[in-house]
Length: 125
Image (cartoon, rainbow, N blue to C red):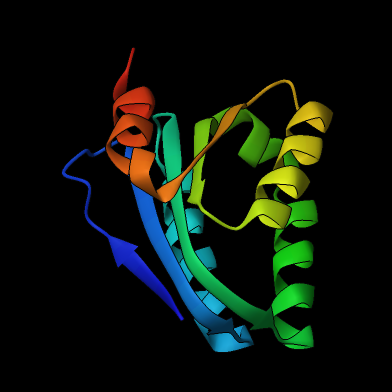
């Protein structure tokens, strides 16, 4: 399940992931990001992963297709991404991906650092 989080900041999208992610669930999040990509201002993403029981093949395919078809827009519009989780393998994977993308500021935080992650996202907006 992916749930939208209202962070009380117009330039930040917030999502919480808990459980299994399927195609319909990820499509809802993708639709929200697409709306932001159409706006005139840059935005940041706060992604809190409480637990991840897996992702269906349809969700994975949808996510990859979206990323590749909107890559230039994403690189131009997304300012920062904060990953908040206590899942070690996910933080390690994210760290590797961060190195491939120098155009977007990306940082991982523990669940206990959620407030710190939000503060980091809100800096210099």
